[in-house]
Image 1: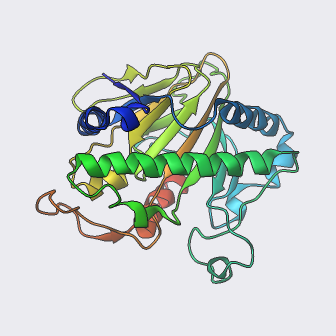
Image 2: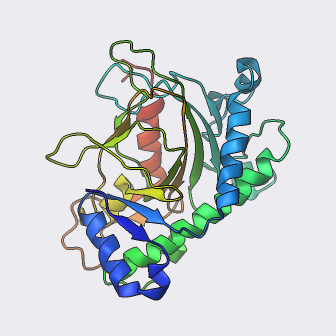
Image 3: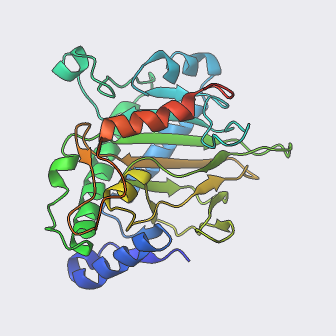
Length: 306
């Protein structure tokens, strides 16, 4: 159900790759991408550094609590987030968020622009540099994938370039403790992602499931070294529902589960509206930052709040 694509084909067999990625985006909204141009040793170091952070005492991680900043940077403890706003479930995962890195004296930071804050960092050797190096590599891959999208949609390959030069992209380290077997327990509730695409790498521990429209929940396969890539709601809206954003969830794992999600988001002021050639617009235009804020407000709202 979820196709396996080879990134090398984008250079050596471009037409076939573009056709395959277009079919995946119109169908399941998920695909696996092997041979990505992100070094394997860098990806391994990200996991190692994440393990070190999540092993810190809670009192150390609390210093970086995500609720202390208006820019969604830092640590979210178990139970802080709820991705499925249709149930009373809260997610049992913990996470650490890293955004587009800006200096404290950057004019956008000083002006208090939404999502334009400084990152917060634990005092761990190599952590900051590893994460920023990976952030840049993953963002570059996300931009290149959008070249394939543009070709599939009949647009110039660089059509998305200006929309992702200073994006709302975010990197999220995730740690899922083993499930306890309690009723109504969930690792991450059923949801669709908010942005353009998500690049996910996992440690191979099962738990991630996808629910194709009109179908039942299915396990997402693991392929060593391959990214799991999925379409987000913003890109679905942008393509006027040509590409599909598909619900997914994470079940409580039998053993500890770790993953790293990279959310490729457009620049804050990018107007998300039906792309040329996609037909009569199904949605009104909206700034990328405004759309993202509306989705995050629901994620972090206390259960029962309106």
